[in-house]
Image 1 (tube, rainbow, N blue to C red):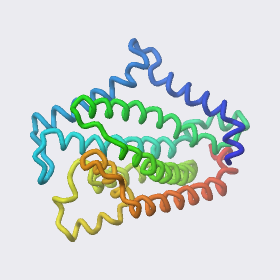
Image 2: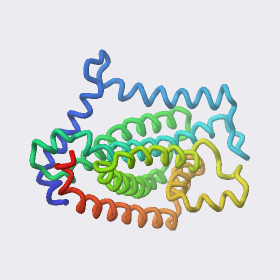
Image 3: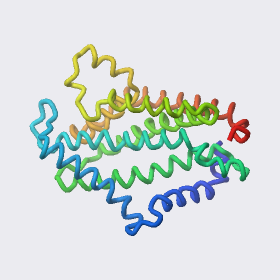
Length: 261
């Protein structure tokens, strides 16, 4: 797989460029929307939740703490879900290429990962600029973002390839995963603090593989602390397992995809 990715690197990069350009085709502002959209999102969260709704974190007397908390969790969550959802449909979306051109189909999830990574980097840089403007720039602890992102995206790509492989043959798989993601979002402490939950319910959140990852981001920006090694290792192991399961499903079903498409 790594050998195929390297040999077809120009094909992958070409797909990424085409995807980025097609998003803003026939748009007056063009690629400027890649910056304007995330900028508007951060401004809305800051103004609506901090100033209008006066949202506050439990035990924290800070008008901007909730906005930072929300953005710290929501930005990587969007990166995760965009990668997962696009990987789930990547074989269907590119069925014409798969049927007409001979190339390793395993390069398509890599193209999706690179494309969504570009979107994430743009939004993340804007978030960092926002933190500098309000006087809350992260220090060296920002390096903790890297292992969290790696573990998170391992899970996203692994699940995406697994569901995407099945989705070619059973289209209900993608629909079911869409519903799962809706529940998954609200069962992850992104828009609320886990501290407000009863102890019995809080214990159940240990079953959510993304909960410690999202909490790691939030603690990094609010408390300036690096993510715990235990939480990262468990997420990393789960990510490796997801990649392995997704790869096995793809290997078993990949040969029949062309006929099914």
